[in-house]
Length: 168
Image (cartoon, rainbow, N blue to C red; front, side):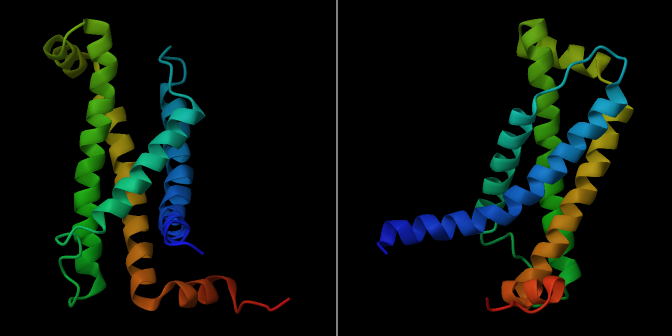
């Protein structure tokens, strides 16, 4: 196997778990949004846009994991790294969610400032924060599982979850 194909395979394997996780999680978020907006006349993005968002989030997580400050507490109990990573990823999620809403209003208003003012006046804040709470919980679950797998190893985690691998 060439170095390039080995690197592509390594990147694919690193990207697969967070992509699957965020694919499922963001589709759940989209479902919650549909249920919350039922009857309001507000349209939502397609499954394709949710899938693209999952790919972007997964790649962002893989890149963030390479940054030296992301694994800030390697010698402390897992709760420290879980809380730290959850806080970082949650802040990014809040910013992305806010910007996502802002782009919609920016298009309607014609300018960035007018779009921001329109959004601040018209957005349904309880819906916005409900989605954020849901996202924080999803991110917390992801960070918890990721840290556990990091400590015990992928093979041991698979064995614990699915039993010993059978040779066939």
